[in-house]
Length: 230
Image (cartoon, rainbow, N blue to C red; front, side, top):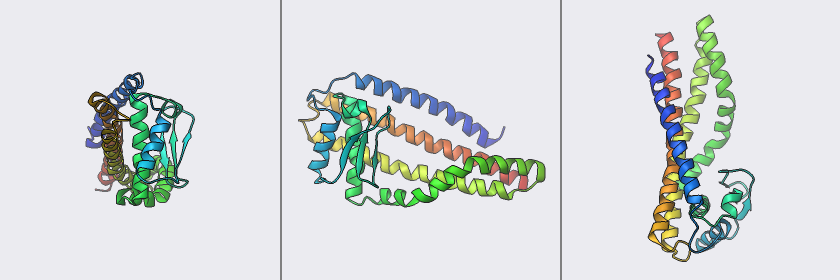
């Protein structure tokens, strides 16, 4: 069996397990009330202000697990469960997204590099699926490797982007946890902090398996291309 295919199947199984575990943890900690009684929106505002950031807006966006920071319009976007929630999970997620805002305000190098990649990654990600499909057909029926080579190149760009995302996400979580630990008025016990740490760790693992999945897919198509060209 092709090495790339073996990797792809193995990582797909791991990804399923990690996603299930992350959702399970998030549900568990969403039901754990925060001792301070603060909402995710209140925590986000406090973290921003503690870091001297007053030009970032905190808004509620529809959906579940749709939380993100938008550097283009300087908004911390929180899902309703996080924005209004007064749980361990809401606090952890809100602080994490503010971690990205702090990165932006302090010109964190990995975030800047990631942001600079967004335009080309957007193009590559929109085209890669179709280019790969057409490339595989042209390779199989016309022995033409060039379209597949373009697809592999586009996939390589998106794979690099997924790995560049990792230090950005881990750093945002580290900033969030450090701030939460230093603010006993937000998280009042060590147990709450450990639960927040667990929630953010499993969230980070979803990015890790996504990066590995992208790499396995790249290896699969690259081996197909190189195998036919040998």
